[in-house]
Image (cartoon, rainbow, N blue to C red; front, side):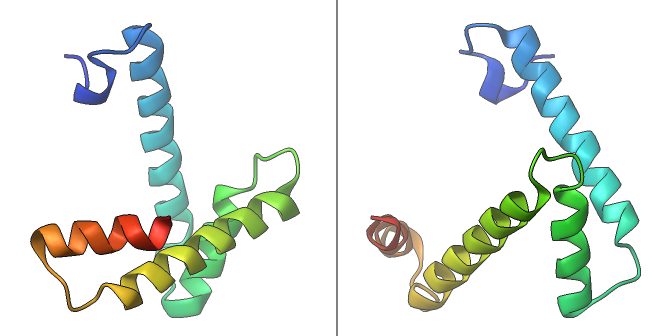
Length: 94
């Protein structure tokens, strides 16, 4: 069965393989950080996610930057729903 994201890919088999690898990595990260909570869990997940990166420090900085950006968007759009929420998210990403 082809994942819906891979249906229109140039190489659906390679796409499926990438998705499978990402899911496996996410499972490993969650398992490594199981039992931790709050900031400790987030730190663990960032470190685990970046363990295989060529430059772990750069990877961690990028992940944390993305987390901060998402939190800013979440806060700015917290009271909106439906089309209004989608418009707010697009505007904040802008």
